Image (cartoon, rainbow, N blue to C red; front, side):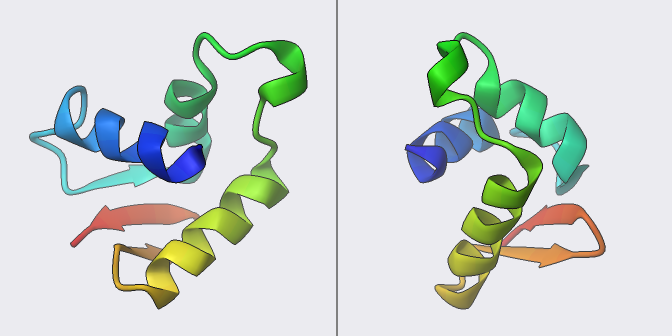
Amino acid sequence: MFRSRLANIFATRLQDEDQIFLADLLEFVNEGLATDQLFGTAEATEACQVMESHDELMFNSGIVYKV
C-alpha cells in the first residue's frame, strides 16, 4: 500500500519535485487513512529502503529522491 500511495503522490502532488523529506512525505502518504492504517516513521523508512534496493527511488539522510 505504501508503494502505490507514494507512486500516486509522486505523479500528482510532487510531479515537479525531485526530492522531499520523509517526514513531509509521510504526511501525504498517511492522508485519509484510518488510524490503524497509518504508517510510522520506522515503517516508512523500511519501505523506502526496500524500494531503494529495487531502484524505485533513492533514500538518504531522511530525504526521498525520485529516480
